[in-house]
Length: 209
Image (cartoon, rainbow, N blue to C red; front, side, top):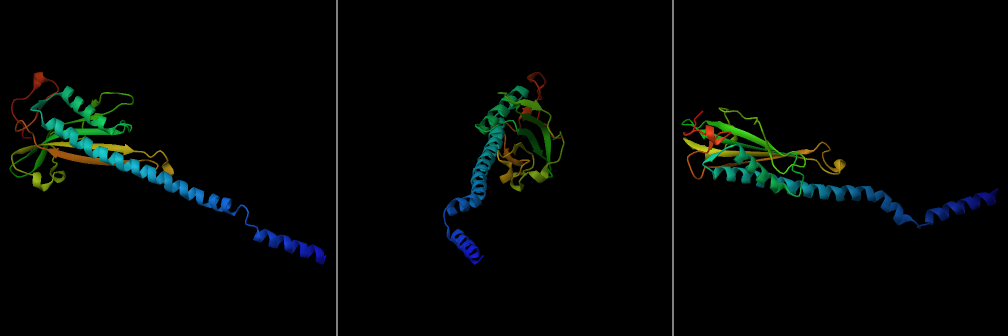
């Protein structure tokens, strides 16, 4: 009996002293954390890159519009398509771009004069125009920087939103992160930028709604 007990104790002691496979066991414990850190770094880097592109898109859309004296739906569609192209190589379909013109009245109240939005369908090469969430006459004073609230002036206002969904959802928000940015530019060739669906209905005076 004592011999068996002694043998058992020796076996336990030998097992405790056995270091074979220790590195593999430690690696198995550390591997999940390493994978989370790796994919987290990759997804974070991609998110930062997409956020930067959202900023560039907002600036491009506003700048292209401000260089015109008048725009029709076909022009806006081209502007939207050009700005969305900046998103390459990332998927452009979660993108929504909104272009508006703002008038600042004598009381420094900013109101929407016209507004149009564009989205990108899956596999499409041209943007699709959609109704904007902003309407003519909407007050948007709160979104305009104080330095740009100059009475009697117009602003081209672009808004871009992009829903970034990480490839590996468990390291970031599974439902995605909404990335947004805005840009303001003043009309360069005229006091305001006229808008109409077609040139046949183009106004001849700047609106002051």
